[in-house]
Image 1 (tube, one colour):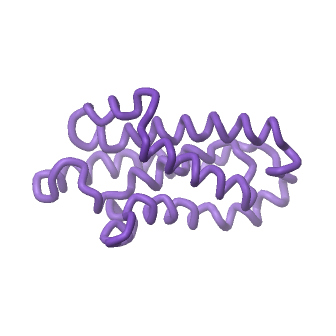
Image 2 (tube, rainbow, N blue to C red):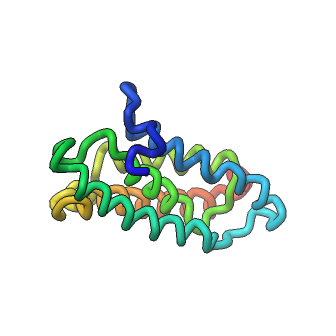
Length: 154
């Protein structure tokens, strides 16, 4: 689970591959969301998955860091939930998934606005929290974009 079902072992951009696993989990929601006509529903299953995977990620990272080192690239569960956070209460369309993915990766890689400070938490908490905050920022920007340009995203 910590390696995103193995994609964390990717020699090319394991964090990006982890976020793509998060996208794949939400692709079925593209079809479900058409029933709700692009509404801004908070998906309770997604929120539950975020909470469960967050605590699994903290525990797994705490157990794996002694062997793999601090914030190992192989652990990508944090990228998965970070992307999911970016998609909370956002209508699921191909565009919102794509833009949410890009925004999350930008915030996760550049780490502006206090994201880097989250890494200072001990062990798994720091590994998970920087991606949580990156996901929150991506969600805020995505919400603004969807609200400002509904014809583009809905």
